[in-house]
Amino acid sequence: MMNRAEEDYIKTIFELTIEKKQPLLRTNELSERFGFSDQSVNEMIKKLEKKHLVSFIPYKGISLTQKGKQVAIRMVRAHRIWEVFLTEKLGVPWESVHADAEMLEHATSPEVLEKLYHFLGEPKYCQHGNPIPNLKGQMSPISVTSLDEMNIGDFFKISRVLDFKELLMYLNHHDIRLNDIYRIKHKDIFNELVVIETDGIEKTISMKTAKMLFGYKIND
Image: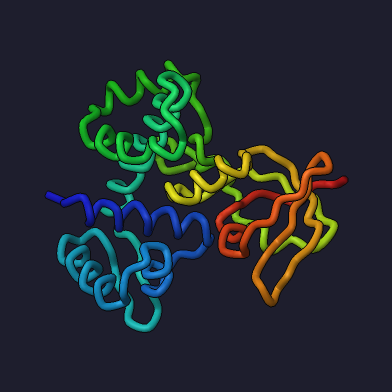
């Protein structure tokens, strides 16, 4: 049996591997995503290794075993399908949907999940822009270019955001949504600020926020 914390690690390892397009993750990459100490991450990795869910190669990194990957795909798929249902059909705000989806993903049989998936029209992405894997773990492309990587004058379309409640509430407050297109008007490297503009309206966001918004550059 796995507890909630272990399952979160398995999902995050899977997600980061996809996002970074690399077979091995360093422990500090997990520390950065979770905000945990390296020591606590290392302790969890040892527990997961004993359960044959991850492989750890000293000085190189961590990867999911086949068993771990199967667990991750099942949970990620269920979580994102439930997020689509809760937001689209029940009107749950995107900043509040994570906790309920987290509970439902563990309580849903494969048969019910597939019926729900077809009922929703077989969505390719969840409400935060994360791709929904199929039963084999294959998924649509994921946006990995962040807004802070853009240059002044570039036009950027937001297609994915990190599923952090505080971030999503901030985006709500500043009326920043998926599929919005912004021109990068100014970058203040010293103060770590970015000024973005759309329809003549300027918005100033921090570099920290810009690094959590993903998408792609488009032609003007």
